[in-house]
Amino acid sequence: MNRCWVFIVLVAVAAWALPGTNTKTKADEAIVLRIASLAPSGSSWMKILNAWDKTLREKTDNRLQMRFYPGGAQGDERDFVRKMRVGQLDGGVVTVTGLSMLVKPSVVLVLPNLLNTYEKLDRVNTRMASQFEKMFADEGYKILGWADAGKTRLFSKKPIRRPSDIKSMRPWVWKDDLIFVEFYDVIGASAIRLGVPEVYPALQTRMVDVVAVSALAAVSLQWYTRVKNMTAHNSAIIAGGTVMNKDRFDSLPPDLQEILVSTGKRAHDLLNKTIRRDDDNAYDIVLKRGIKAIEAGEYQAEWDKAAQEVHERLTGRAYSKSLLEAVRRAAAP
Image (cartoon, rainbow, N blue to C red; front, top):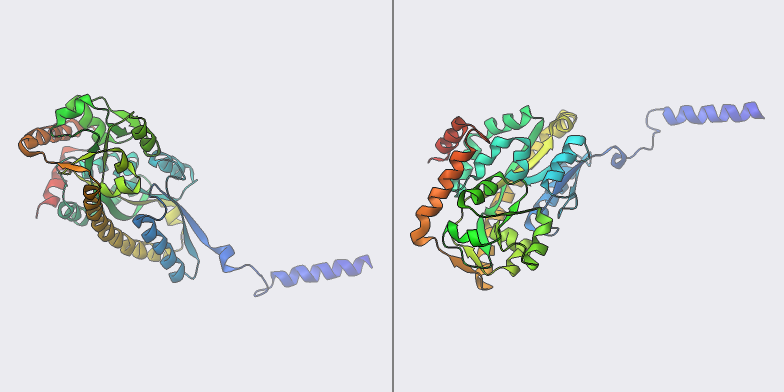
């Protein structure tokens, strides 16, 4: 009897191993990319990112999928970077603040008064794409697409007409934001360093009373409900994109790499088109909600001088003079 049972078990094992008898499903074989974002659930960003995932699943017969963690569920952008480095995340949808932690010279894209129109930023992204992508590849990362998050403005409880007005205020600065850390130092303001999730409570308690953000982000994060003014002029575009650990990307089969890149390009093109429209709409919305737009007017020269000093201070520290000049040339019509 024992020999009979052994024979039955061996036959069952052999049958399971035969081609066509394995019951493993496509879902079990799926490759799932873990991608983090600060964008809130239900926002324009997440709607398009989720649509990207849906397209990716359809085109790969569910072999490749994306699992997004929105709303800072994985922490701040510095946490995304750390988790990508140790393999806990495969990628992140980040601003230049996050990108600069991987490739510091990328901060050149958000220097004040340099690429402060979409046209300039688009020309640079088109003409210098390969150069920036190589910089990231050399550090072990793959850029899946470039996308921005609206125009940078200063939202504040009190009107800001000239840079020196901020000296008597408590401006927030993102912990890892090289640009505004330098800008506030240039004008002599004492900035409060906080992560993005900490900003709303800080506005409530008046720990901070100035935030640098786009109108769309101010609405999405509800920060606009805690301020009364904003600068009418913008200093830059909040540039960013989706970055992925290159080893993880390279581990994908070639056909999946190709589909991921092609669908990513379409998703980021749509992101830019949608976010720019939504940021303009958000600007109109906050005006209707009583936020006052403060013009630079006669003080524009002071803003320009502060911006130029930021450029000079960061040249050689964050980026080379040759890169800055290359970006200026690429931005020209």
